[in-house]
Length: 120
Image (tube, rainbow, N blue to C red; front, side, top):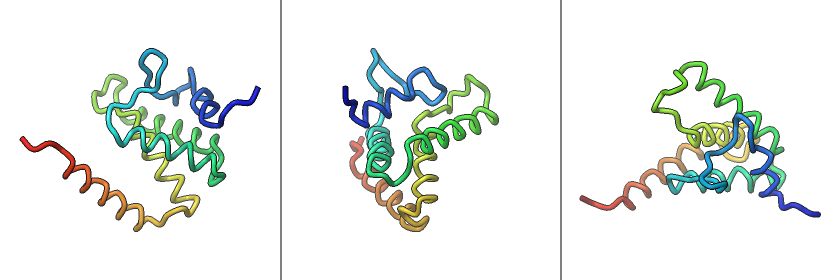
């Protein structure tokens, strides 16, 4: 039986400290960018830019770093910010983008998100 890489990547995290939030078994995204970051991490690994396990270990380290400096019930906990931090670190380490390019793309994406928000 052949398993798609995407299924392998997502299921390899089940029950582990780096497991994404789920609702009724489905991966849960609260904000648009979370799904995009999730998909980018998997797609870049699938294309061979880095090993999936390297990403997972970076995510585990990022979660552990956050937990070491915060209380377990800290309301500022955000799984996908840890995911994004891990992804950014790995794309920089892999020389997929420069730090300047990453900052520029982030700035543009934030500006785009700001203009997409409904005006009150």
